[in-house]
Image 1 (tube, rainbow, N blue to C red):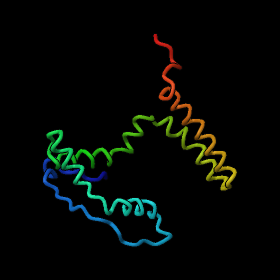
Image 2: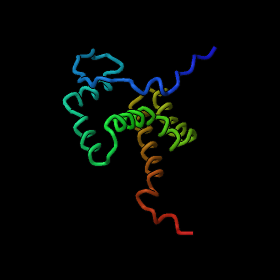
Image 3: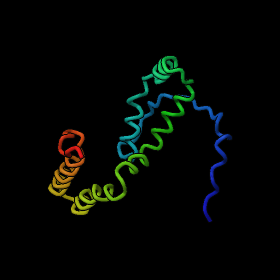
Length: 135
């Protein structure tokens, strides 16, 4: 049996979120330590200062901007997948998977070199648009 769908969008329109600064300690072996460190890095920043200024400058309510930022960030992974496409995501994952199976520093460095070449190839049209002649 599949999970029940989320309630209609309108029921969540008035959700309220309190912006909190995360400064709690975490264990050295916490699997989410990198993420928590990144969250803590921004603990002293007031994002609403930027949101209020942008709201005033572009005439979009602050709540609408916050909703936009959260939605864009929350869907970034799927957006990235859509941009790259499933085939390229699998191709980029292959050297990593091979290196992890091998479990050696040399294999990881080889994977890095391969990924670097693949990404360099993907960037080429961005760095040098003249490589494709006008049609």
